[in-house]
Image (cartoon, rainbow, N blue to C red; front, side):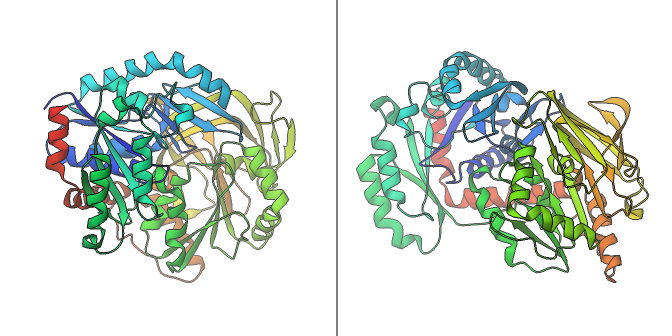
Length: 505
């Protein structure tokens, strides 16, 4: 079977499209096919930098990992990164195009249509199967005219569609029926199967409803996937991640601020694999407790998120933690927030020209118009965290600011390689007492040698013995999760019928 495709669409956002797309990618790969994911337009603040230095959505990176292929911007030609309620940064084929309002982008979409088709055709010609993912719901009839991500994309790629409904939120039969009934007759012909996701309970009790929805819509139900938790990044169930580990107890407490414009919170997924770590996301309206480590993550609008911290009293709490000797880590925007000042002379991020930071690192940040997007390798330079000195780290940069250090801060690490080029660039800063550090490098904690050394340093300071990770590597851990996901979906979805749909389309 060559150059076939299948598209996963949902009755709404957060029904599990992303995770099911990853599951299909792994299943097809296990069955011997070269497979790639594709999402024409992804709206997310979680992004990744490819080997070429191009930016794409992390959901498609996860799906590429499931398919065991190298992530490529062809898999996600358009990435929208909201910067305010009204505007988003439009990234096309990995490069920033411009900031647009919702209306401006809607008017711009027809121009993108042929470019999306070119990207898809290139990808389709390289792989046996492409698994496409939609966005939100295809029943958004006000957006149908210029649609390039749901049924519009199904038409561009000429793909059959599987419709996913989430039974956990209730009303699944109404949402399936209503979605299909709002489609045109041509669109309905593309819907070849329904998958009900996140089911809890006895499926035999559900069976009468399955029979009725098949009769009402004329579309077969191909499977009922049970409610499961996989430690896999999933754009469709972000809120579930922030709740899952709240009850897990551990000797070390890591708290992560959930900023209004938080980006790349997946930098910290690795902590969930460590048995001695309790992870808590500090949500809006919550206070910071007494963590061993507080992390300020990246942000798409650093200045606005800094104002949020000040207005909610969280800034004062962070400063008190610092004065009490607690460890505080800032990644990218979080690193900028820890500094003395943030200047935006060209109003790249906001209307504010300059603002005082938290003053916990002697640094000064200036926002620029050009975005830095690179993969890097580096080495920890500072001796103030002895267990980390000379550790090799890998990750990627996505930032529009440049930060300079004052006299009371020293660099945290040296970047030795950028996009396969040998360099020597200082990055980050660490405080005089070694308890506070910041860096622009995303993914720094994915290396378990680095992370365990960092955590064991804290354990030693608390009088606890070192702990060895029960996980061989974060990559190996994720591989097992992808296989576990594939096993569950293969067991509960009629894959023979899925293959038949693709062959006969």
